[in-house]
Length: 362
Image (spheres, rainbow, N blue to C red):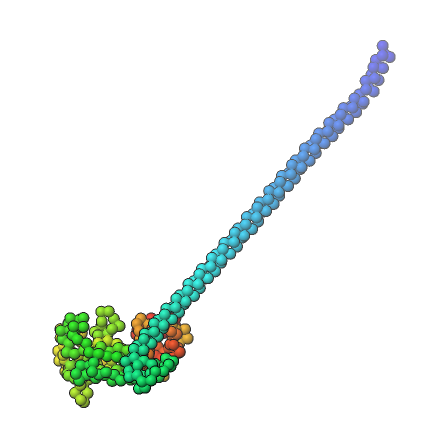
């Protein structure tokens, strides 16, 4: 029994350390396993965080790429818009340039037509005058009755034809240095203005293809009124009249129209008689014949003048009439009341009061 007890005790004693060792090993193994699991979980968490970081970086990269693409598209659209605006502006400029060229061409055609009309009217009038002179139209105004062919002479070089003063009222006369001036007496019935017709004492029509610049005189006492043919109905213009030593009342006339002898005193007198009712008062001077000094003229570089009527083309401001002016021309200089222009190859002056201007004409 004692022997068995001792063996049993020895066995238990031997088994106790082994069990403890096994338990210890099991514990260590469990702890190792748990530590490994913990490390694996931490590694998994680390991997997840890395993935999230990568995803965030990819998202930011995509957003940056999208923003850059949007900016590039906006820049391209802005450039395309500017290019379109530039093209449209250029098209507008080209259209305006074309309109300017068309307007200049229209003005040139109108000028050519007006010049052709004036030239034709002048030629017709000269042909009529030559036909009325001794020797007929083939003589060119000379006294020879022989028939000969000759080129049409320049009207500026032709002698002034003998005027038929028998067509004037008794005692009336006209003196002029203007070529081819024409005139004739007018009956009262031919005067359309009733106030003038009722008061008129005598009347003379004065005209000419190269303009009018004449002294018109009546045998009698009164004032002189011009019915200006440049207007319809005719405008009434009181002339600056005066008494000559021979007792005739006269006035200088610088445009075509009907000169009418009216009751009253010449405008040069200090106490003129009352005028018929309904007529405007006479001026003390012609407001348009102002003799500006050509030396005071200002040079012009880009000025076009266009007449609003057929104007007298003068040799100097308020000077002698050379011909007519109609249409437009470039002005090279101006005074207060006159423009200096070149017209049909000639240099002369036209009134600044009867033209419209284009460009720098001040």
